[in-house]
Amino acid sequence: MIPNLFKKNNIPNKIPKELNNKIKDFSKSKNKEEFLKKSFFYIVNNWGGSRVNLIYNFPRLRQKDLSEILKSQGYMHCTTMNYLLRVMAVKSNLLF
Image 1: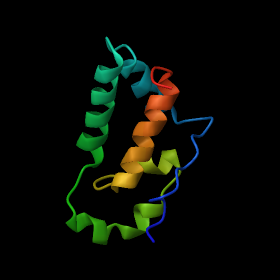
Image 2: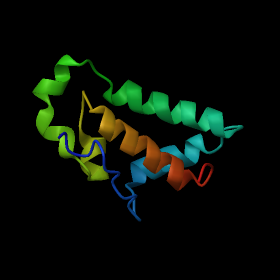
Image 3: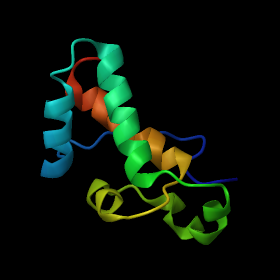
């Protein structure tokens, strides 16, 4: 079984300042859909990749620490991307 695939990580109480600033910036969007699009493209543009990278970056699959996630460069697993998007959505107070 792939770690974190069937289990949601908890939303941390404190998030890194860099991410908090992005959330505040994106929260100025005219609606929830625009906020999600900006957040999604922020994540994809910074950490998107191809399936080949899945094998090379397998140890990063278990990342949960937001500071480490934001410091990482290049490929990010889809489960980690989903976690980051969920954190942004919840911390924005726009969606949940």
